[in-house]
Amino acid sequence: MNYNYKTATVIALTTAIVSCFASASESGGLSCSVGEVVIENLKIGQTYSLKALANLPLSVTNTDSKPVTVRVEPLVPAPTETKQGAEPIPALSWAKAVPDSFELAPQETKAVEMILTIPEDEAYFGKKFQVNFWSHTLAKAGEFLAYGLSSRVIFTVDRVREESKTMPKGDLSFSILPAEISLKNLSTGVMYNLKDLLEKPLKVHNTSRKKLVIEIKALRLEESAASAPEGYIDLWKSAEVSLSPSILSLEPGEEKSISGTIRFNRSGKASHKDFMGVICAAVTDQEVKTRIYSRIYAHLK
Image (cartoon, rainbow, N blue to C red):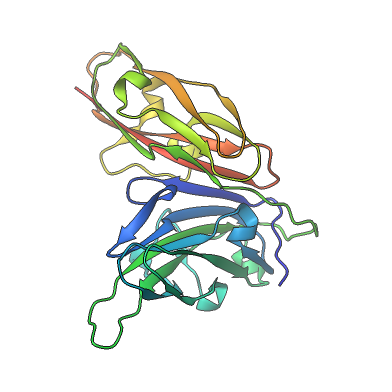
């Protein structure tokens, strides 16, 4: 099978509920490594493996004390289930999982390759689609309980055809933790040190087998694929933030802490109390750009 990857960008969103590498999504005795992934600029007429594209397999773990049979199925989401303005994929033939069924012993993990195929049709230029991969157990004879998890893959189709035959790759084998940060009872005009506000320091961990160069920066919501909950506004439009270091060089297995400060501008009585921002960790030395987000929720007094 031939895969093509030119100019694709992969974004993994990490939150307490939707997670990628940072913390597993769990249901019953099953957990999986991917909650939501956003992929940009895929080409029509091409087939993509997320594992080959960005070292991003769907890792499924049996957290139960009994062996289970697992099936991973692509699903066309209902229009009410789609996120970020995406449309459901037009047909199940656009996606598949390899392998799509397997046995898992207690505490065993297996990697599943998520594959996307974009038909050769210019009508899809510039569109955004969503497919869900449902990882679930199969009830055995005499059992009535099965459980599962849904991993959401959102992708955009580029407005031009693929011209190059090269096959660049990226790497999402790193994490930024905590995946979700809550800062409470903040005041305007006060400079806060992040290490004093966090129970655990913000760290980036290289889980790959090669050296990675990672850029750290704060992203406004319109620059990211993230969206704020209802009632929240963009944190970085109301606060000044400084993160250090901005560039990390990590050897395999190495992790480093990120320090920083945050200060809300003093501009009279604040009309909003709840804010959300994104801290982005991006691999800069790969042909396919890959990013992982940590979300910050801040609340003024």
